[in-house]
Image (cartoon, rainbow, N blue to C red; front, side, top):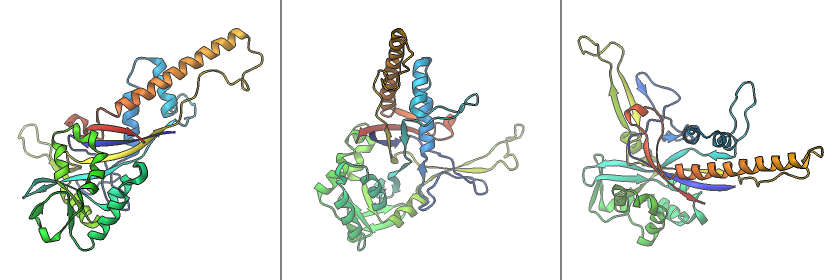
Length: 317
């Protein structure tokens, strides 16, 4: 099994679509136990599959079916694929600041989720230390400052905890490829706060982008009755991550124990060539999948409004 970790940096707001709407509010997908917004694995898998299957090469289309699993078609049963995706969860969330214009926040829960997939779980010490510091301080800053405004909430210097430079360097080491891809994200090193899980949840709720949309009457250009609605979205500059993996591809050739003894040498050779072509196609599809997950893609709904455009960076675990 080859496992990977992909970072998803939002260039435009992400509307993932919620399981239920309240009144005129079109909500977004949220975790049941935390209420944090997230991007479901089914959305990731569906988008990647549609990108891979967007080809006129029938051999590659069949290989995509083997990788992602065959769909129900003409009464045939679906098959299990060789690729899996986990949900994309928040890692860094942007918040408006009266003192610093823009601040990214994170919390021990998000860092702990991230750490589970990092080699040797290298930020375990930082997470443990942050939880200890946050029992006495309101936040831990990656930068020196006399005060920080988060939205309109004021955090004075006395309420800010500190981490050593080498402790922060471990965090940013794993984000080097992502940071290099964006001038704005280079600011992340000097504009990051670790908050408690509870404060982070409250600020995320305040920081979600909400847009009011209406439909106008064609003749009068006044609001059409019952057309008012509000849409939620994760704001641009947010960073999410998700893990995924692929089962090891099979080798070419025919298993001698499974070969039909009635096959002629010519049939065996033809079957071996067919299998070799399939393996080559499978390897090519796997390569294309890895390439797709290192480019710019669109996720979620409202594609016609440019929502969900994201930069992706993938590392092998």
